Length: 146
Length: 247
Image (cartoon, rainbow over all chains, first blue to last red; front, top):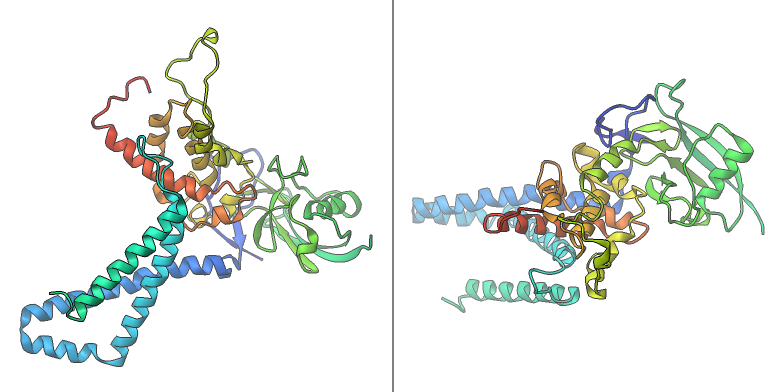
């Protein structure tokens, strides 16, 4: 079965002599695993927006004073907040893995005379950078640096 | 070879009679080595001569026989009937206006294709006496993959942006434009990049990567579109310091 798409999708600038039926797409298209993953990838934007609001709350609490800051810390320890941040972490990992898999082939063939390294090397570099940044953040949070 | 009966549910649309597309079922005795196109030709020849569908080469070269098979874009001369179950739903390519049955309107696609100047543009043609434009294997390698496109339009059927943004140039047209931009003999990059920077072009692509997943020739249009994004930006930036006269 089919569902309608944009009525002007792939229509010519001037209509032909024959009447055409409007463009359509399979009804189950967006439920297919690949498309579902793509939609989930897009939907993670909502989670990042909410994380942004939480970050704003943190900054506001810091500026208001120690009592407000301690109260916010208590709120952030709530299991719902912890679950939300666990979800945000899963989203970040999911988007990073997807981005890393698509990034190497998006590189131009050359920039001036310089050519990009082979795609597996770019991919390895991305994961290495990710691990390095994560290690630095963990060290900062654990008090190892600063 | 033993034949097996399979049900083909085919989208039918007669512009003179039907208000909207409808479905019609056919029982087809398929041979084990049949492609989906063989079954459609059997229906046309033996069961219902009024069925309309496009095909030509039967060897995945001409790109004429693209259709939706069980909801997925497919080159019907390439995909075997044996790879599907006992029921196959055949529909015209998604995201295209339907002319008749499984035949879609191509004019919109051809307009998009023309807009990227899919040919070698030279600022000044060289004289025949000067000989051919020579190209090294390394220079050829930069665009060879993108020149394998057979314009089957499966990528347009798979693209979620094409379904929602009518002005989007689409994967095949951008990949072809990018193919010529990467060609060492071509001098039309500035003209094509101007098109690429316009409304509904490379930056409308949200990198779903579906076009590359369904491409029967492994052209990887998603890579071409995203490389074209980078080149269009670089071209725009260099335009501030380098004169484009003659290009």
